[in-house]
Image 1: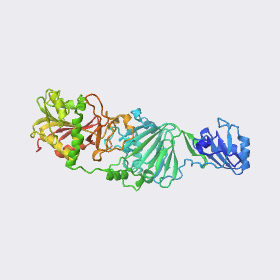
Image 2 (image 1 turned 45 degrees about the vertical axis):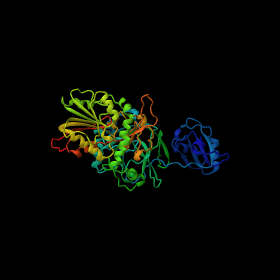
Image 3 (image 1 turned 60 degrees about the horizontal axis):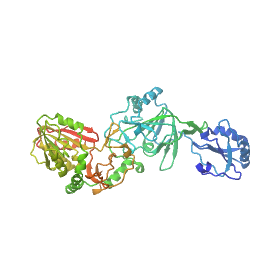
Image 4 (image 1 turned 120 degrees about the vertical axis):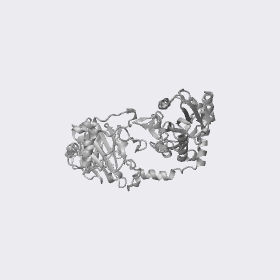
Length: 576
């Protein structure tokens, strides 16, 4: 066991160093209990106990003292041990890690004992509920308030915020910190983690990009030892955090020193004399970590090697694609939108049957006899029913337009950038999953302008685009499959240096190529996918696009199953 776990080999000759099995910290041994049985056989220079190990080591001042101890203790069973002792000679003994002590704290670190009362502790613990255990972390249960922390990206999702705010039960504690000057402002993000004995968290520095200076870690339910390490100097400070204590991290301790919790069932603490080890069994601990989300994306800290904000900026400068020229954008759309839809028209149509409920509701709300234009109507699924309307479709794909005509739908082949109708001739407009196929902001703005142009003043339109945010209120959209998100992201790029997106996973970048495996008429699925270009929108981007064309035209913006949606009303004062 010694050779396997500690790399130590027993000697065949006497030395003053002994290894003792079945009496380590994992077996209930302590510095004091071992000294009680070892001192009787000679002068003990040191006793070494290692965390979670069943063995210990002793160094005598003379070899004869070690020989006497081996003869007297081998095969005996001390009161604290469950099995007999076995002693052997070794050349060297390992170095013991220091016991947890708060003698010298990292700069900017403050430990507050009894930070909350027992009553406050109970009320705060009652707010913790795991919404979806299947989505909890492998090593602990977790819940977010205010903003979600995305562990796969190691950063907070700043937009959109969660509907679930920091519980009111936490506010008295936070108000005391702000009132005493220990925090400059109230946090707006809370992550609650529940640790079972044996669970931990890897050493890390909280994201600079995500959070401001001033983190608060509140330990509830049980105590723990947290390890702080300075990556520049190698300094290690194990710190004992009693239950109901609060840890405040500012400056170096916030931005430079890593903190983590070893995954074990016991903690090694300082003994009564402060120089040796004792062991404490862990129990269920719940941590409340309060943070303030950084309003801007840049961090001006001095710790470049640990700053994800500076790293992201460097990466963006190196990899950020230049805005495509209009001709280049048109070529991209031709290759990765128009030609793709001609290729997949039949298979694509087979996958598009059911109307999205909120689109159907919009159509049902349009007055009877109104003239509706569906821009990018696909296979015409929104033009089949709703018989109270007069309906016209526009479709860029000849293949999809042919499918529409086979279903008795009036359709014109044309381009959303140049609608072939006069100003103000339609009473309502749809534009579902179209604008996100345009490759530049200017081309997307032009499509928005065309849509508003052909609307009659006072009439409404509905626009849907794919959202970069594929999660809302703690739940993934139907597009994202949890089993796929666990796969490592592929670093693959296609035409124009655009990343090739992994289907059924969250989006990481706004401009992507999305694979489609086409199925032929005989049912054979192509092994080589075609790639459709998408610009996925972030919250507020769709509203800003249309408002830049006609201020005040967006009546409502909402999120619907992985899409950002806008309801428009053309203003009567518009010159469009």
